[in-house]
Length: 295
Ligand code: BEZ
Ligand code: FE
Image 1 (cartoon, rainbow, N blue to C red):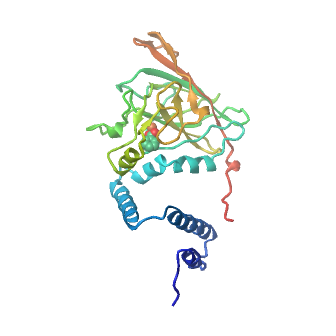
Image 2: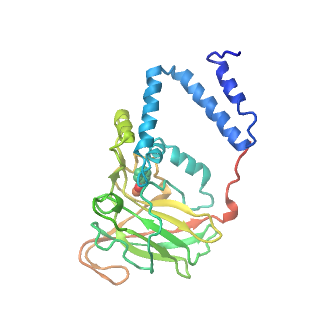
Image 3: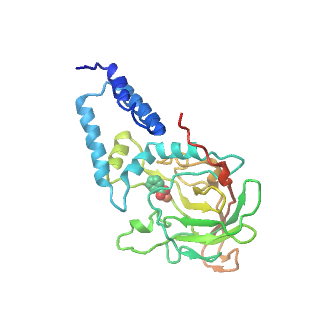
């Protein structure tokens, strides 16, 4: 028989994975066990705190459905998602930076012609988006795909609107021969991450607000290049400095220029004030993918 004390338990648990034949898994589990044990010792976790943590994680799991991923929200609000994304998608040579995907991506948005209005009938201030998709060395990428989604001008995604079953403010657009894209949508506003579950309770207990600054999401991809999951943030939006999921990167903050009612950039009549925004995305070649560190 072998007994363990509060120190020797760590090496004993790590010793039990010696036979694993997956070196990367072994590396991750060894580090995880070491950090978790150190954490328990450091804060001197009580039994009731440990049960509270187990109950919290149970609630997080039980809040997940096919439409809601509370574990990702937990990862997002603890800054883990952005940490993983930033480690794995270095913005080198001026490539577009990545940020969180969030829970409101809906695969299969309609592929629409250049210049389309993605947000027909959606509340919000009209906004004309344009720019180019380029390689990091400045070559225009024809037929690059922008898979775009956003909430409406009141901060609600289609999936969150009771009774709304169809896609709204979503679409896929491909660049022309000069790598250019343009489309119409609305100017997104700030909104809260879901707060009616355990992560919301955690944020309140931490004294934190749940808001994200105004942003539009896109996944930009092109054959032979690394896709980038990112946002354009509205310059001047509230919460840019305190995004609840830590997703803001300075390079992704875009100027939304306001115009009086009149003709839009593509010659269409707009009866209300409207905005234009121009942003170029640079993609890294697929050969630049980071190797997995098994050591
Ligand atoms: C979003 O931007 O859609 C989002 C990201 C993380 C958590 C919740 C929402
Ligand atoms: Fe969002």
